[in-house]
Image (cartoon, rainbow, N blue to C red; front, top):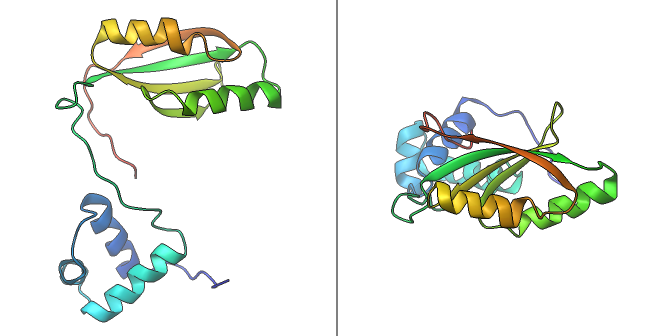
Length: 153
């Protein structure tokens, strides 16, 4: 196993550039971070191997895909045993409308980011899918009016 070292300014610059534009060529990436191609390539390889970069993906346009409605759903479970949490987690993974799911320490158990076509579609997903997930006792919805910032980091 390769020993991880601390990230320096070039590593941070590489990560920053790729988080905004994952399809940069190695030549363009090297130019942007102030390195020549070979050292930049070596750093990129190390960042990938050490798991700082977990992969590359396309950022899709939700409006063009007719999934512009965003709601955040608080979920309280009827029980929070390990078995109940596992059942809920496994079921959530299978729901395409749930864009993200976070276990929360606080007044409720999970916070879901749900993306649908419109409020009517959300209402259907809430009633037929989310409320029927294992151990769901109650939900509360917050509708997003505008996304000001939505990024991974």
